[in-house]
Length: 422
Ligand code: ACO
Image (cartoon, rainbow, N blue to C red; front, top):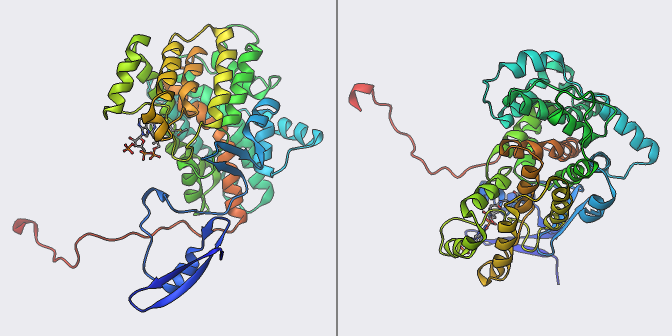
């Protein structure tokens, strides 16, 4: 059977055969036969915007791989910084490479004093930490003006290091500021996740050492959130990056995309839903109302996964490890009952609705003491590695400026009327 499709323009009878390559057909070929006829594809439901060799997802099979390595194996055996290296470089590092990489990241965690004193402290006292983060990342481009030389390999690499390294510092600073606590400087003797927890929670003690089980849990959650191919925020990064803006500006756009409740805010929605359900006795009634069309089961379903989200399985285990230290989140029983009821119900099974990664992450973060406003911030920290990997891949592919077309449906050639005649 030929691996191609044939398109006929019924107006002219002209035909074109387009090969199917790697599961896609080239729009360039289409354009040759049908110039000026655009695909109407809102939300890019049917559009592959690029070739990429970073992350592979098979939604039907529930498969997720970074550079060919299954997510479960990375979550079990690797660390976030090693995974960040893998995403960016395409290969796992050797010992020396990893040491150098971790050293570089660790020694770029500090932020310029003016970012903290003049910039962060300028926000209103109750500013949302994600709003602070988005603005602070954008502001970094003014502190590192050389960042615009995106085709200079050394300059590019330096900004990648800076962004991955400074994200936890900015994130923790945003939280501390929003709750009126003093800023905590990075402690570069600590590993990446432990350092972040120190910047979050340190009070008067000379050195804050998080429980190792909690540091590891955060590190694994960072691995799980490090990349997810062409999601909304990564697409924002690519679109802004395609104009050859500096990486701080592009990353700020990506973080802004993640701010929205349809993308980075789902785990908060899960917590709000569980609070609304209130007790295990109400679960069956709640599921019934969802089936009757009153809202959705938050943390269930996924645009790509039509099977159990492979990350959700890992997150369930992390939840147990965390609750062993923090005590069980009282909302857990409701969540487990909800999962049990939904997974036994044909409504959810027939629509292939399974728990996604966010079903349990909110419970974990909440048990660890993170306020809900920090949930998208916790997502942005590790996703920075993914954003930057796609950005660098795009620049190396010499991609065109992202500039879609539209189907104009408005009025044409109207005559301007003076205001007193309208
Ligand atoms: N609860 C109940 N019904 C649902 C749910 C849900 N969570 N998700 C989808 N459905 C139903 C829809 O009502 C629809 O039913 P119908 O065919 O009878 O009309 C069917 O399943 C298909 O739904 P779509 O909206 O077409 O699926 P889509 O792929 O567009 O939606 C999405 C994916 C947005 C994630 C959806 O499942 C949802 O809203 N889930 C809840 C929010 C959530 O958890 N988001 C986090 C995603 S993970 C992440 O971003 C990190």
